[in-house]
Length: 329
Image: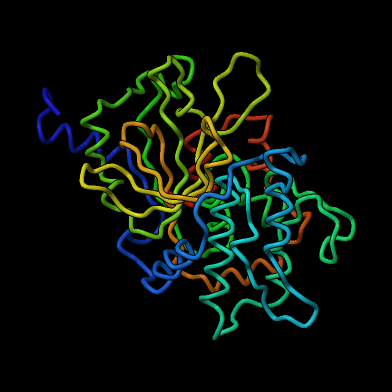
């Protein structure tokens, strides 16, 4: 933080961070504990795989595992989610699965989430079964699962649509001229970024979308939201995770399905850590009203969030769009 007066530094840091209506101090402590307990119910590892075809390494795909993990019979008011069956996995599957598991536990006594809402939360992922006789495959932005599995700040958009919580975000800035949204956009120093107020707002049990900072190899992917169809453009490289806190070095601790790495068979569910400087943009999402997931009863399987849909090969989102669709002021 050298060469900056306290006043100037405060203005720089405050400008980089935004949050939604209400205070970042608002916490549903029971829900946060339920999310962390849900994380603890998942197995370690299990493999990391995003492909749709069985292979010698992964004879059972993540899609099949997810389909089998969400069980809801004709007479059930709510599903049972079996974490052991949801293997192998990938990051957005992991955070979706924790969300479902936590909701089933949180709502077990009150039953504020209707059967109709639970039915729409089922992951329609192209596998024919009793719940999905036509083999519907929800693309990014389509239905509940398609939103949770989308590029960009997927969980933040979903939670905002349901009025179930709020998000807050910070952006270090683009390093390359081609990805700057304004001519005067600057890339924050390591010290500035580590001191950004956003890190102190977070609570264990928050959902995070990480946009990785890959500037060491010359790319600027962390500045990019989504994927477009322009050859040569940088594209989003992100990670959907659950925030656990910080280690003794101040590094971010998170849980997700982590991979693929050199040996994806040995990866999957587990805890990861990273220096804050490995992140270029971050969106924290905090659920404060889990009961509002009952609104999913109106989110039919074919219903589309067009912005999330556009981030899957058509469009790069802007910071202003991210804030708009996450409800961030």
